[in-house]
Amino acid sequence: MLFAAAWVFLTAPSSHRAAAAAPAFEQAACNFPDAADVAARLRCGTVRVPRDYAHPESGTFALAVAIIGSAQQPALPDPVVYINGGPGSPLTMFAPYQARKPYAAQRDLILIDQRGIGRSEPDLCRDLNRKLLDASIALLSDGTQEAEARVRALHRSCHDEAVARGIDLAQFGTPTTAEDIDQVRRALGIKQWNVYSESYGTTVAMTLMALHPDTLRSVVLDSVYPPDPMPPEESIIATARGAFFDACARDTACAAAAPDLAGIYQDTLRRLAQTPPTVAVPPSMQMPDDHVRMTAPLLAAIVTQLLYYPRYYPTLPVLISRIHDRNTKGVVPLLAALHAAALTQDIGVHTAVQCRDRPRMREQRPSEIGALDDQLHGGICQDWAALGPPSVVPQGTRIPTLVLGGQFDPVAGPRLGRETAERIGPSARWIEFAGIGHNVRQFSPCGARIVFDFIGNPDDAPDAACAGRMPPIFAPMSKTR
Image (cartoon, rainbow, N blue to C red):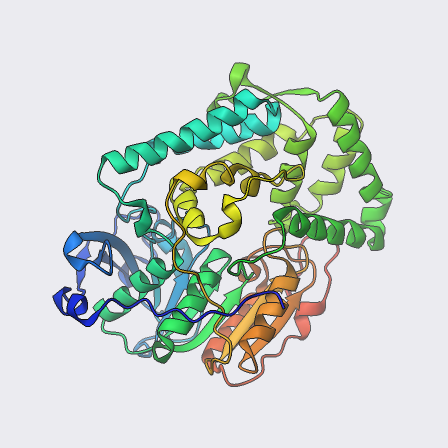
């Protein structure tokens, strides 16, 4: 049994609830670039939520909200709320893009920047975000105690900067995020809505399912990142990597381009451990002397990140084979692209939430190469904030729930999704997608169609035949995927 079930009721005492003002939506300008074609359907604003739900008198934080009107009007009364991952990923900034990707027929879409992220308050230490990211890359490239000490020192600076500005780091964590999202629902006057969640957002969604079940018409859990206890990070990564290597061996074109990819990868790691080549990187990455060493941990981290994105699957076997032969051609554009994507993440909020949520983040233990998150947080979370209330898996719920997972997911893995669906019970349907990594709906047209149909009719079993079709690794994804 993977999870220890827990039911936690986090509502404040009645006296505190009475003191809290009813939430309200305060409209503001949207100010999105490149939104001319969808601007008429966008509405933006903020909702103020208690900093501390047990003590509403402690003040409020403003959460940024974007409402995307359905292209089909009038819209149905039960919209879709999108709970995204991270923790630490912004969302409202992508409203124009999301407006062009309907989640369901005739339903508005609601986007919320979780507290501390994007346009929402508070700002923990966004001025340190780039330094934290670049220091982490330098640690993968360097591996010295000095490099690790710098990462820890920057996290400590983030902590101290937030505390000096009066921010209580105990005011973060998944149960708080779930209450924030329900406050937005109340502010918008919504009786029931449909939840689409991905990655870390699935933990938030499951907590909502436990605390506010009557407010949910249907729930999609895409690429489940469940509460602790979880398998070690490195075991999830190794399983995803092995699944990709096995698929390459069964794919004629991939196997011809990289015979025995698994063996090549392991031999490459051994060679890099002995003599890592140096690679020039763009100044935007702010590395010492504008170079990184292509170490085994750095390669492992790159491979893990590329498993997120099906468009990079044809690149991956070629990249590993080239580096095996001491050819670093193609590394720099990949590093630059991954670096740019990572810069949108708020590392301070990520740490604040993980340190509150996950007991394993307080364990100081070695990790395999490429699995840096657990290893670092073991020395950071002890001093960050006390553990918060546990998140939950809502077993026995009657809410129609669709659980999606990708075969190559290096973060959550299909095993976690399948076992979560089993724990939820008969109301949950589990679908695994061949040839997909993390965030199924985003990268699979098949997954997007299944989500669309499910939200429209959550009591009907979706047609999932397309989910089992493995696309060629060396060819673009077909329109049916």
